[in-house]
Length: 98
Image (cartoon, rainbow, N blue to C red; front, top):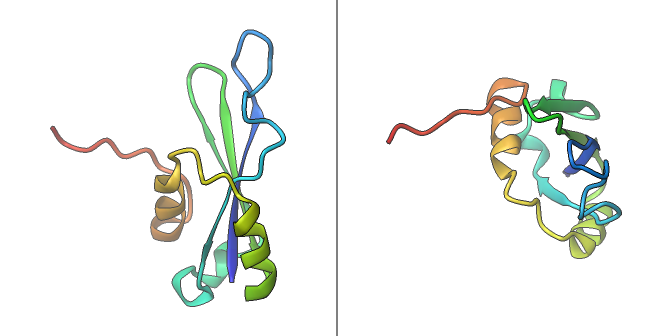
């Protein structure tokens, strides 16, 4: 299994903190769904307001991945980052046409 873990290493908030700091945010995907060259890497997305997201991919056994996923608080609405990594090999913000 490939585990995607979300963190916010740079915080643009007034106090330099993220309200979700210390929480675990992971999603899992099957190895066959994630290109091998994207395993065990970190991907970053920086916003203009000073915030930076990091999504780290880690290969592990299905049992280990399930244990982490049970503790996870979701992915904070950033599942689009996982889709972008799988599709493009980086995090690209794509606005939908209105």
